[in-house]
Figure 1 (cartoon, rainbow, N blue to C red):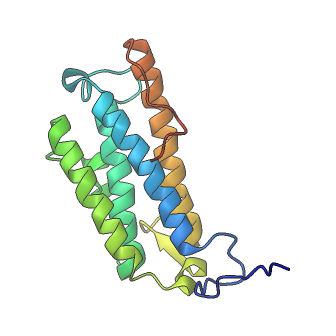
Figure 2 (tube, rainbow, N blue to C red; figure 1 turned 180 degrees about the vertical axis):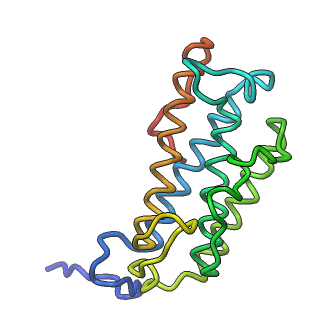
Length: 174
């Protein structure tokens, strides 16, 4: 008779339905897919092309990076930038090319992996004022960062479609 065993190594709070490790992998899967979308964009369209008055995907990518990087910094340190200090709001991002965006994207991906190791499981359920504007549990902020990325990636699919460029499969997060 086979016995099912439960991995007891994960010590996430009982209120969590997904382990911290699985959540990070889920998020990084979305980041891998969004990176493919950035790669698919023509260099000359990344910061110039838009549809129906929406921002360019380059500007949206900067917002995704701000939320991911500044958000995790706030979660780890408890010191949050305000929304008005973030590059996608100030317009002061030095990123102006696809190469620069991809380089920054990869640096943030590594930063997330490193910072995640400093995040104790009980921290997910603590309430904090993210970006000095949005009060809620840390887990809710992380889920918002992921939702924000998915939302803007969906907008980029509209752009790529209108440009006649094949979009990466939405399910291909490997």
